[in-house]
Amino acid sequence: MSLETDIYDLIKPLVSGTLIWMDQSKTLPALPFTAMKISSRRKVNMDWHSAPNASGVETVKGDREFTLSMQRHQAYSADSVTELLQSVADKLQLTTVVDKFMAKKIAVYDVGQVVDISALLDKTIIEKRASLDIFMRIKLTQTDTVGLIDQVSVESESITGVEADSG
Image (cartoon, rainbow, N blue to C red):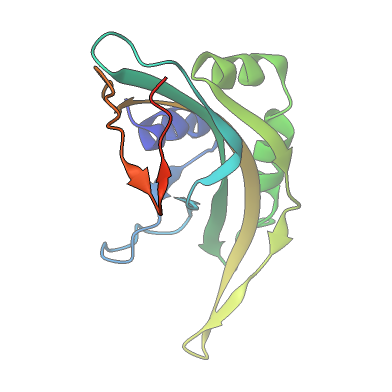
């Protein structure tokens, strides 16, 4: 499964109503809905490299972190726009939720504040919006075919008038 699929499956039970990935090329669903977006992954510290196996393949492991940004969109007349995202933030601390994330090898290491970012659209409609950033970390495991050096040969030659040691 992909990281996006795993995150969607983990977040969906925490959100009531429609949950989508932010995609500007698609038509938005009817209000209310919650949209998510994953920032690009950032490398944390140095990666670990194994010794190559007999085929010249090494394993590379490293931590990557990213931000899951969530936005709640709902009609102006609806209840508090921040309530649903605050509930998500609170549920991320529950043991059963943490266990489900860990089973997918995803760690939530910090949760930002829920921010009301309601907006006036077309000078006539106020759309209630709230935003929440969730900071996550994964362990990335890759393989790299680095090859093997079968043999090395050194030829003796003179370097600027000095004979190379052949012994």
